[in-house]
Length: 305
Length: 252
Image (cartoon, rainbow over all chains, first blue to last red; front, side):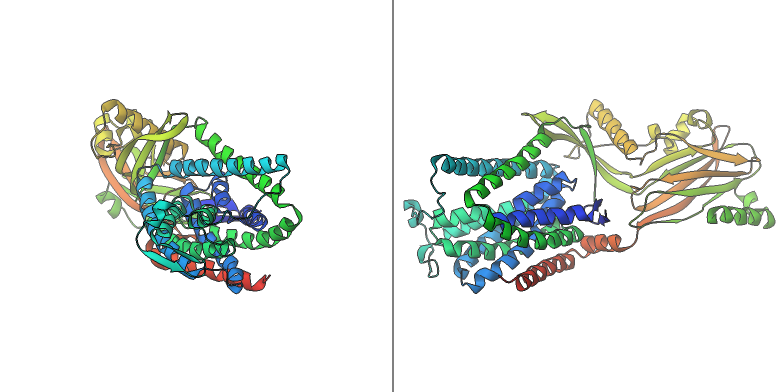
């Protein structure tokens, strides 16, 4: 028990619990190869940290985990800088919109509800899809496929203006598509405090038709810049980035990620995905129960400055 | 101990220094401490309010008002199965802390028109609310939100429900303990002391009290609120370097 006062969350917490939480999320991200932001924010909310501060501080923590992740991909040359740049321009525009929306919802008193609802929608659909897919492959005894289906070029996408060549990915497509994708994910970064990799990666494979080996590195590359821009806007407009909380989370994440990567090598890929799906659904049902149970007091008071 | 010491010194000065000051003013009052510092381990504190009156018989009423802040009260309703904030009431510039102490029950010591005029007692405190469009509320809504606000503030210990006790000595000296909870709002407070005789205020004294955060947490908070751009850059740089250092150390 080491009690630490979080200056922005205005709450006293046990530092070992927060470091442990960072380690748990780092462990799952090392194990499953996902960012873990979508688990971190709801878990912080369960600890009693306000959804707003959980989102702002979570975004700050994602900068650190994506920087450490991208280094290895750079060494192997698995980053499409040109595509990453187009995605991050869209992403920063989107997160700017998202932070303004966040501010508006905060003044209307609806931000906590919006964050919770966004999580319920995303966690239930992602968790449900993963569970159905991995259980299905378990029953059929077919090895879970990880190979991409290859580029799927849509007729409408080919007619879009601003054609651009992306040599690294071997693509000649309209810049409007990655810009739009970046923007949609950018809004989610601001509202949910996630990196957005769990949406960006499948979209890059199936929507843009990028080769799998450059997808993760490019996604991490754009996440770094979008989360930096989002952290800056959140801290200046919404004042919801708690540096002490972030510090503890980063410390835990460092330990957890190393440990998770090693454990991941021992458990099979399909079992891993069933585990992750169950974890996502468990967090989701926790959020749902908070939304539907009758509050102790229907009234709440906040001081506005 | 320091507090009692201060009281003794003060009383000594009062008697030795002559009657000049008290003869001119029917009531004088002071605090054991004008500055309350909230550190990381702060768990609430007491401030002693003490003073003297001239030798006329009367009652002492003390009113403590915290910094004036805009409070927004929201009501949750069930909408399609989930609990959603619906109606809101905005209370502009109302005290974030409010406590009253007196030598006797308020309604026997002070007539209601004086309580109304000076805002003595929670019932007499003007707590006017508007809706989110800054229009005044319907009367039943206003009553509902006012009751909810007082209830929430009382639960937080910021509008203490019980009337504080003012004890007197020989009709000249008085003292009262002001309890400040761990969650006491920061800002400038006023401590008002009224000397009431036969239902009329014959003397009053207002003393300031400051509550402020000190230490590391307070510094971080101030940095984040008043130097937001620099704070943002510092947190970003820290995260980038931490991530980069990790990648170098755990090179796979």
